[in-house]
Image (cartoon, rainbow, N blue to C red; front, side, top):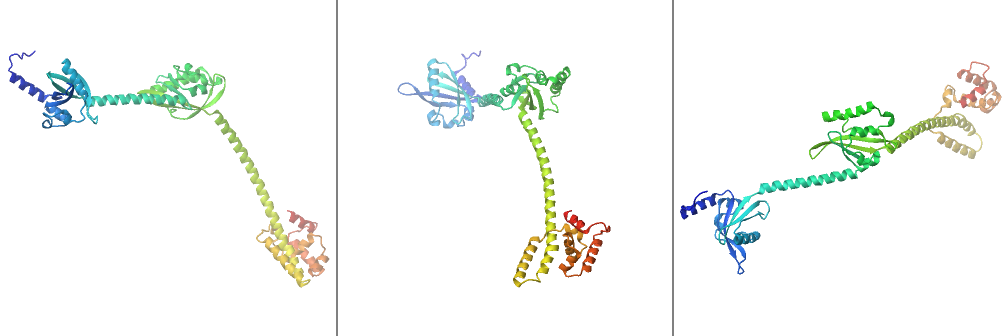
Length: 424
């Protein structure tokens, strides 16, 4: 301990001033101001050091011999209460304080060097306070995230199983209980390969299957990756009650609070898969019906075209020539009606094909008319009389028709041939 008994007072004062001025912490020497009831209501600045000027941002010349309420109208009145305690008990106190914008935080120490005077020492703890705030925010976020994560797991419409890096089940949500038929209490803590083996359909359970399951996860934990991670698969499982269901299943790695885990999502798609198969069968049957319907429609269209062509051929080659002959006979009124009938018939048959006459393109118009008469059973005499030609000329046309139609066999009846040609 330094003996200060023989040190002159002036030297002590100079030493105190030097110490005060060069302190790393901000310091202010104040005198208490009391009201009529002797309560401290303000302070007068006696001195401040350079660190105080830097921390507070106010120059010494602006505060010396001025009251604190003048310099800082919104100063913390708690200081008055603390000053009362210090001066009464002559024992220092500490408290934390921030500036008006709460951008800087200080640890403030108050003690009394002599009667009615106090010394304020400011220790800037802003960075420490910010670090604490960040830690509290982080802790709050972690708690909030954990609550959200837990809420998502519990309310998820998919079965969720959390697995740690050693294969132990650490979480098993309510939906997974409903899907699997195994309660959470019987799943937590078990190895995932044990549970998956229990889910295998009875016909697929064997010691080899169990070893394969265990090896699959051992490889994953050793390597930290596997080609089946993050891949959606459809698996078939058998519940303890014997019901076989199909699941969409995917396993993904996650990190929670720095811990490496694996999360398995499972969704019961038994009804969906059944509906898909029924829809596929319905589509197959519909395609077969559509094919059959198209074939029927094609046949109907072909028959329709054949009938239309036949009507056109008959009208153009048989009816219209007869109308032409009749137009030269009868009264003027008859000829008008015949002309109207001919125009209507031409309009009806306009644009029609001519499939029936395709086999008879080598015949002239007159030969075509004679074919129609032969087909209807008229003799050469009757044909000659209707066409105003001789009996022999009609026979000549008949022989020429047989030749053009390449009917070489004399036993072939021309009338029967022509009827078959029309029907074919």
